[in-house]
Length: 132
Image (tube, rainbow, N blue to C red; front, side, top):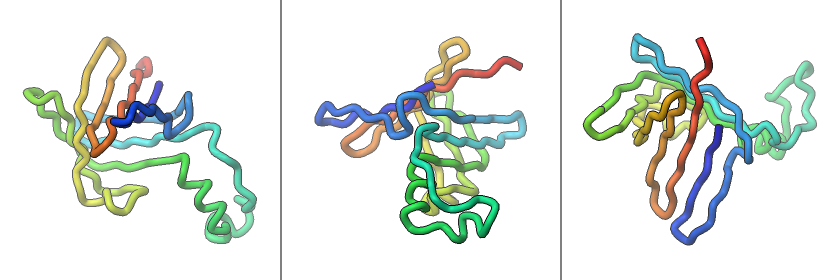
């Protein structure tokens, strides 16, 4: 539904645009995956059916990754702290692989809000559950 970054200086940004698209999945076995994309991210000039992304220029690669994030692994919920911990196994950001991502959570009907305090900023993602 939304992803906003609020900075201590009062600025608010939308890293994946005003209407991001994505999927956050948790399953009963304790696995999770997350993908988030700016549907308005700039296009590229490489040909997908030719050499593909391996032949993309550095500029095109920057366009590809700057509007997309994805990772997966397992998760735990700490209900006393209202926190979900994503134990990242695979990640687009290499520094995340093998580590944990802690998110405060709030549930309101079919909406899940995940947030994290970072130095100088606070990020908030709002997800809406799809019907079964």
